[in-house]
Image (cartoon, rainbow, N blue to C red; front, side, top):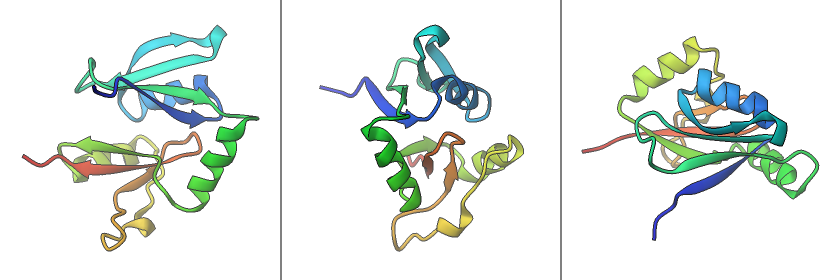
Length: 127
């Protein structure tokens, strides 16, 4: 058994799709604005785990998203080849970095805002 799809709560899937594809570097797997449906995948692994940008406005997931954000808890960890290069790329793209959360003692570092109400974290790929 392996994971094929995960759900990430977002206030607006259409806006989230734009952010995830233009700023964060994901690729569209499925997109239907009329159905409020947005699914993205990694450019590095297009057949890997897909991310459903799940509308959460007005349901239980909205409280979860808000609580996780306010508690400074990343909702997802992304693996990258070179953290320094990715942080620079994200900053250039206008993504809000959260260096004040870099605390290896807590196991939290390289955190950034996805622009859709979530914190994400990057982890550097090891051999």
